Amino acid sequence: MSHTVVIYHSGYGHTQKQAVAVEQGAASVGGATAELLAISAEGELPAGGWEKLEAASAIVFGTPTYMGGPSWQFKRFADASSKPWSGSRWKDKIAAGFTNSASMNGDKLSTLHYLFTLAMQHGMVWIGTGMMPANSKAAQRNDVNWLASFAGAMAQSPSDASPEEGPPPGDLETARLFGQRIAETTLRWNRR
Image 1 (cartoon, one colour):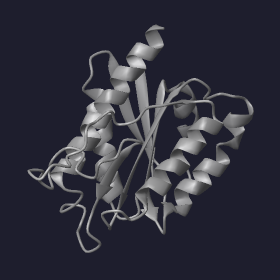
Image 2: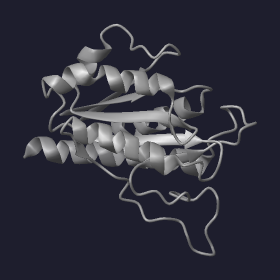
Image 3: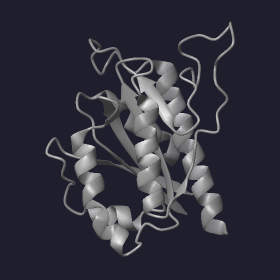
């Protein structure tokens, strides 16, 4: 059995939609469970949030990319994670991450590198997407991994799109498949 906690901050609802897709993918794997854990607009976790993270088999970090990095709310959570860090309480847990921004590039890779570094500081084991990119002439915007990320899942939501309009279906399917990969990898890791 494995349990994935998807901890995320979403400023406008687009990253939350991506988080739900990751959680659904993880929960779809037999022998796995998953849950969402939202960081508030003030950068706080709900009651019992730290305990849920400590009990998780896998932690998936999610944040929008603002100005080339994570939101300040996510950064506040990351800074507060120095308490579990000091006791190596997340060491050897599976980790992964995802992000969303308005632009196609939007420096999303900088955010994924931030999430990767956070996981490495905690001694976690990082999982990438494992997906080939949709980068042929025949590729369409709603193909899986159209944004061609290997380090973590990326999504793009136009700045004037509501959460109902973005991220597009291909980015959400990428997130769902990514969640599935995380849960499958976590199950294999826990059997070692």
